[in-house]
Image 1 (cartoon, rainbow, N blue to C red):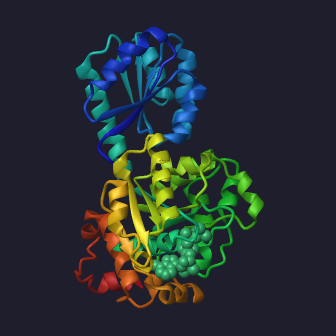
Image 2 (image 1 turned 120 degrees about the vertical axis):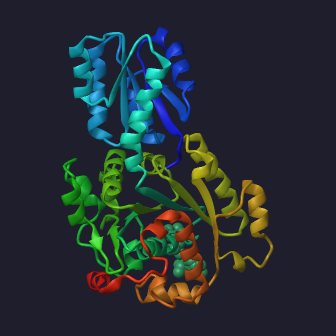
Image 3 (image 1 turned 45 degrees about the vertical axis):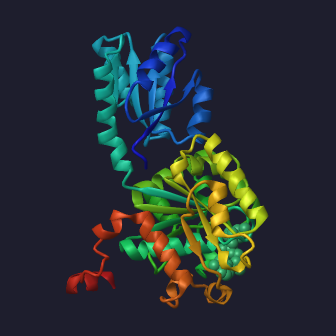
Length: 394
Ligand SMILES: Nc1ncnc2c1ncn2[C@@H]1O[C@H](COP(=O)(O)OP(=O)(O)OP(=O)(O)O)[C@@H](O)[C@H]1O
Ligand SMILES: [Mg+2]
């Protein structure tokens, strides 16, 4: 998660808009993404942009505003909330906190008071969430290698951190993450959608398929038409719940975009667009990037990975692609069909076979880059685990 907080202002009082916006935009490390003037507008924003914090202007109708606070606090527990109001009677402040606001700021606003409230919620709530990272992987064209990369990345992350890594197959209709792992999941994303919002960590644990390689897979629905039951709310809630369980969750996304996909993208810490060095694929990289930027996703969270770049015959090079996207590519995975398809034939991700293979090495490098310091913390840098560690790891 970046250090800049993406914030939104909820305000139904027209004359307060300009002064409130001025106060918020003068804060450091804060980016005011949008102002919502109604509960409907707010709902749309929460599903699309990756909002970390909402300022709720509670005037002129405290009771209605607190109803909205209550709903947001229940549905989006990871988002910090700050209430702002002229009404400073103790019972009004208490009602604000009880509805779910983390902090209360009186009007007229004292800028130091506002900054203190923001830094309190940032250190208390938002930094805790930053311990978990969501990596979305999406292909710029069909068959670009998205699923192969997502599955193997999940396996590398689990291996490097020595902790389970979450993997979500959001290609609800035709995803094949489970096939990559040669497993036959008993439960799928559809079962979460069917449980009607009563999903907690225990239910989630029962639905995930735990693989021996420490990848915990949330599989796509069994039947194609079951995808209709999975809406943006279910996706949002499920991925937030995964963030409370796993330090890393990898999400394999389909190429189409709909509200449930933007729900996954909005809070992603990193979005990897997988492409091949072919004109249509590169064109789609740009179209996808532009769409992400329009959704309010910061440029630094978007990276491009070239798969099978060495099979393009050199007509288009990675350098050409870098010129088009205006920054270096994140990784380049070599072409080795025998190796990758062998892993599929045997239902094993490529990380499980031939550890010295260049494809595996490139995905491992990607994993280390994503994890950064976390790899060192886990003690996977060659340090011996000792007898107890080895026994527990069995
Ligand atoms: N680096 C690679 N070298 C050679 N073959 C690869 C490589 N990566 C993926 N493949 C092969 O390309 C095919 C498509 O891969 P994959 O299913 O991962 O792509 P995808 O982008 O998820 O496809 P879809 O658009 O259907 O979801 C598979 O047969 C896979 O084995
Ligand atoms: Mg796929």
